[in-house]
Image 1 (tube, helix red, strand yellow):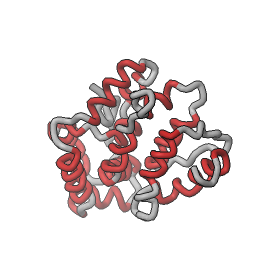
Image 2 (cartoon, one colour):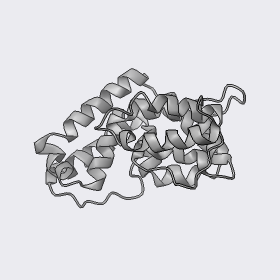
Image 3 (cartoon, one colour):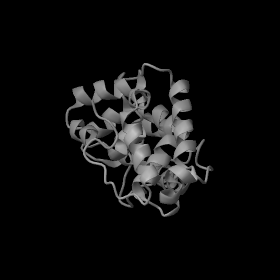
Image 4 (cartoon, rainbow, N blue to C red):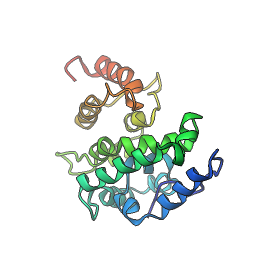
Length: 203
């Protein structure tokens, strides 16, 4: 089962307390059971590897959506972890020094609710997960929209498919785009402008 940072975790932390936090977090069954889609997408080598197998990918997405604990319970877990990792005696120093893994984790915790909504979207016509359909397309354009919350801007050459799925994904993101603590606040505007230019102002 894919998990965040399942290939390797660089231990290049400034503080031993931050290393201890990550070691404990990765062994925490409650955290693992919540299967955060954003962190899987951004940090899991196993998740990336299964994207070439739509059957396995669909089953894995299903696991991120049908977690043992409810979405609200998992969001509470992630909110607690976001507070915890930010403490000066945990990873506060590493976050202040812009350590990539610490920032990645903080954003993953903060964006859990948004990314669960986006990752679990189902195309009502095909009954398939929207993310799986995006991966299956020859063009990677729609997949780029799922990386926006990770802080990755959409490539300038991207031509979105104008699907109902991406329209709904953007509708989820816009609810968070004004939150300056989240990377989506820096990546949403360009992606939305590009989608509107390609798909129409009412898209």
